[in-house]
Image (cartoon, rainbow, N blue to C red; front, side):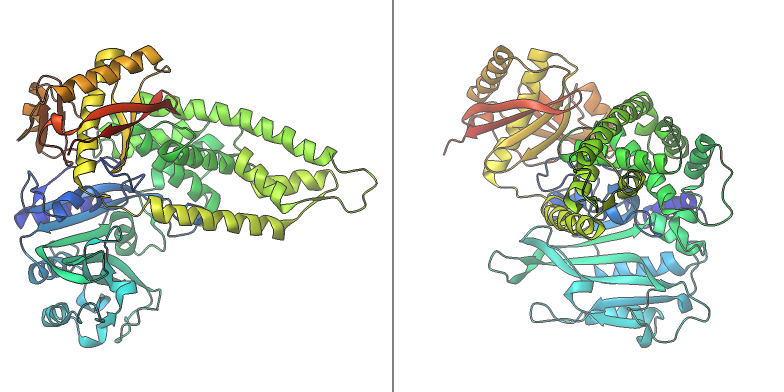
Length: 594
């Protein structure tokens, strides 16, 4: 079964069971300061899982584009991906465990759907602990549906508990479904430690709220949140050892082969080839959502992905530009599913071409830095060594893969301190992962009054920027805490002090006007006719919320807001700077009124 068929079957199945299909949200989280990218299907729905009313109703389904970068250095093996699609269905205070588990079982096993024999399946359920009891209901339901007791494993919080997204909030036990990929027949007894049992689906039952004191209280609104990775389930159902062996990646590898002038290999793809297609696939989608390569946050991650792909291309012997060729294959394959790929094709191609040219210059600079290291070593030294720290600096600062450093060093009679390099690399990974735990943990920071006011201020800020700078200004990201706002927007030049003063004046005038913040639900088409701005054109469902503040601002949005602009108090811009090419950043605060 092909990925496109699985994707469509999933959506149609849940629509048949009363779910409304919603569109994939942007990869750039809306009003979430804790997360650089959308990391899971549930991420854009956190406000509704916390009790807000979703315009499309209480039963939802979609396929969501996701980016995860916590294990970016592991990409190249058979399983890790940076970009992936997540199939999901949700109950927002509607059905719960019994219906969710029956839906999962039916979709997995019925001949009209995936048609997996029950003999190939196993499941896990929450074993219980001091905070919450054993999930006897999930255990009983699976057993009644035909999963024998020997195939149901009871595991603890580490394996069968979701959340909360932060330190507090909605959470609960989950149940995970596994498919046997080893020789037949499958073992009668399920051993979760056996890697030949591959997880393909996860149903989360949000029935608790973790408090600041660390206790778990029953939630007023119980939710179901599920996730099935499309690439993984496609590989499993096709009997492939890796998702890179499926039709999902075939056209991307074919594009790479055309550029190389090489025939497709008979065996499996190399780690370098996998890195190239994975990273450029992810970069294509990030570019389509309005991010361009830069120095911090999402732009930095994008640049790292592109440059790592280019480095691998050079190692394969590709001297000229090639990234756009692979990106075009992504657009051709998924442009009908994600229209933003076709709509942003020119931007995607031009940015990749530009980045390849810039990186060529970076490599040239790195070569000069390498030569400086060589020249600093006195000729009479018998054992000439490039330290691990310097080798890692060449990698991190100039993009030199360690293999290139070793090869160039050998040509000049030098060694490279590889243990020292690996130690520097390990320390870097630890710091990166520690940062990832903070940056990529998902979920809204909070819906506090202070945060809602600052979020409301971003609407007024964008309206003022468009009035002062022009209609080309569009939001490119935001980071809002209870203390301050950070707003990224499209603009080619530095904003002058005079322009910033005018923007600040306009925002404060709107605050002084005590404008009511009115919310209406309507179709996307109706929203466009009212003149509402859509910050990310393809992220909305068929029904959206439109927030209007007098004649000043009218935007499609789903986050928390003040009831009246007069609640905001004084607005002050602290800093204006570059975020990435063609994108500026403003940091500002408000002095709220009590």
